Image (cartoon, rainbow, N blue to C red; front, side, top):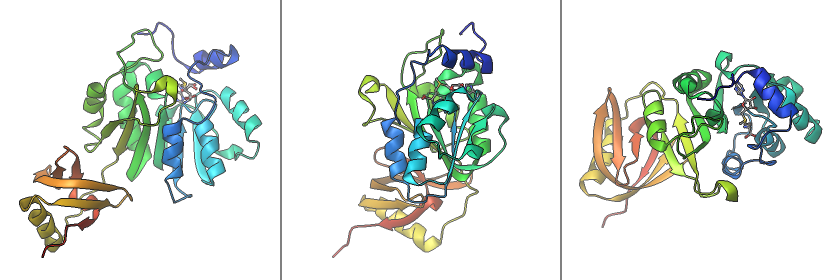
Length: 268
Ligand SMILES: C[S@@+](CC[C@H](N)C(=O)[O-])C[C@H]1O[C@@H](n2cnc3c(N)ncnc32)[C@H](O)[C@@H]1O
């Protein structure tokens, strides 16, 4: 464990000394790509531990209107305002993420989790769950690296992250990033954790299609309510904690009420 107390004074001093090796001087490509794919420019987006907030600037320049960078210290926001004087100052949140009380559609993670004392990891997951609206998403990058007891950064593995997130975000996924910046290539996982909504049982006729596709081992295309699309064959339909799920051939599990449309191959 780091011997330093990772409070506002600690981070303030790091910025004052220019000791910020995490700062890549530009929006992280996985987050930039994610933002480019969002159509609704009025989504409320929080960036906790935003630092110099390149991703917030990028989102603002893309036309997002509700972007809220947050940091324990206001020092790095001076840099943001120098780069982008028109960024709405009333959206700059200086304070402790763990004491923050508001709701967002999206929370973006970028070297915030790994900068926190590891004893806060479960609380981080709980607080993320609290600040997200139902169906809201926490997305971003987590390092896939050996634990580093003298962080920050503290490191961690997919296995550890999965067991931390699954209780509150059962569908959480970690995919190796394909678009990391070169110095981080192969070391970043794309985190996607959606806050579950109360389950809305699906129509029987719709369910029959899932069952038929599973029985016939068809390759199907599944359109989800969040706009994303999945392909594969359904290998299992099951109920967990009174929620209906399907499992695809690649192991992905999807709640049935998250499915907007199921496309099956035409027969005959
Ligand atoms: C490693 S830096 C990452 C900054 C930025 N995300 C980046 O990638 O350049 C971690 C940031 O988290 C901030 N931070 C640490 N603990 C925090 C907390 N409890 N609430 C809000 N911000 C915090 C620090 O001040 C620091 O700016």
